[in-house]
Length: 83
Image (cartoon, rainbow, N blue to C red):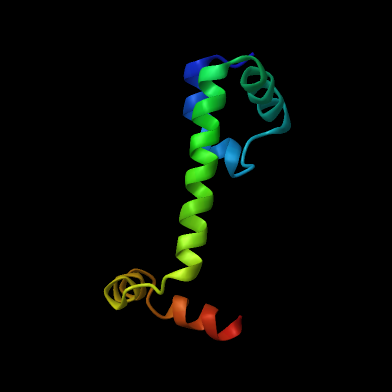
């Protein structure tokens, strides 16, 4: 069974559905019974939603786009053309 430290450590992976079903089950059981972890979970989930919505509404700064292109080179351009 998950404890608070394990739950907080795996929270992002839990929110991204990147955990095995057994780990998801363990963390879910812990979250149901732990008010502190529930609050942390709710905060992280809400923060993710706010960032996600903001990212959709705000255009990326050109400097960030340039840095991303430098990291990925032509792979990034080819992927966006094929989308």
